[in-house]
Length: 205
Image (cartoon, rainbow, N blue to C red; front, side, top):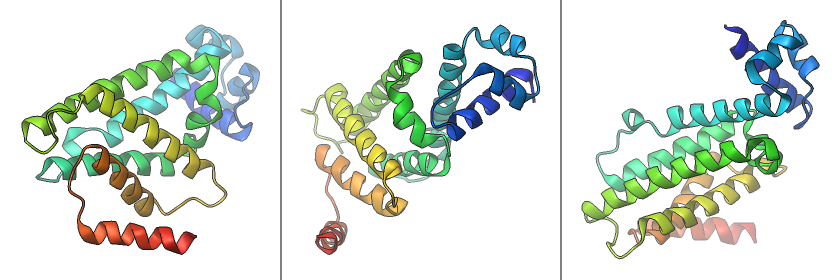
């Protein structure tokens, strides 16, 4: 593993252990390099934190959004697969609660957050237009506005799930969020899925 990769891994571990705090000296010790090398590669503590978050988002896109990983033959099925992959990546990654929580508001990562959100908006709007061309999504919906509303809702639901004392089952969370997405896109929801969610909601009262 190269020195920059060791530093990124070490910084991620430090951030997790310290719940969002980071000292360059501690990162250098953990990576078994000089602190000078850490500054050489990343310029500053802020630069290193931003690089760690950017690596997280790059891996999220590779893992959850790669078209080659989607197997459903229909548009709605592929979009639900994307959603399931997105949620599973966050559930499995130990750094995810910090990224969607405390670090999302940190000044060091604002540019990284903005760039990732813009990529999500662009890709999501493209996918909605594809659904409109296929006749699955109503043509009168604004792709950009619709995906912006959905990204906000999905992100907030994920924050709630990852920071709660007891995480909801990932499959249940995926189904609940997909129910929300399908409603926003005016997609038909199977009756059995709707009844299942209603039963779950009643059981939680």
